[in-house]
Length: 167
Image (cartoon, rainbow, N blue to C red; front, side, top):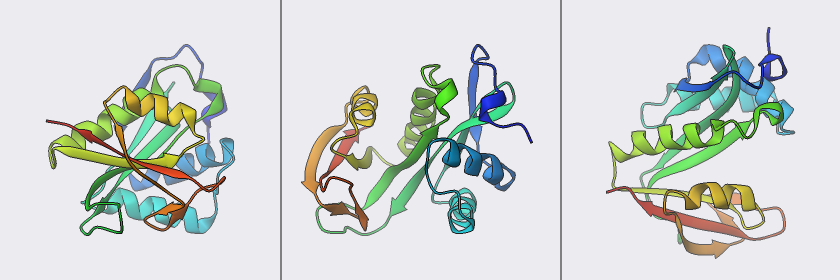
């Protein structure tokens, strides 16, 4: 099966909704960025794709999956983290970074959330400057800092919860 490394870096990047058939390619992207690509992670990705309250999207270059992202919906507050639609994990294969995949994946998820809510939320490690800079383009502002949000703890100990108005 072709993988992210097979995509030509000059191919235009497109985004579409993920399907269960994309899970193996998404797992390959996970491995390429040094994240878990276990059977449990693949199952979690499949569940996200099949959940009508969530969105999974993939980025394609040269017909190959080179990135992916998802949303989460939490109906109840959890400490400082309010109920709502959250941007979840995002990963782009290293060999195609800088071609706009992260921007397209984020915009697709925000468009989907906008149809359901006037607010989008997300959290990230305080040391993840790339993620914080990416999301600042859409007006995300800090809501809280903490050691964990929604059961996710952060390497280095500090996470940032952010919110953006989509109105």
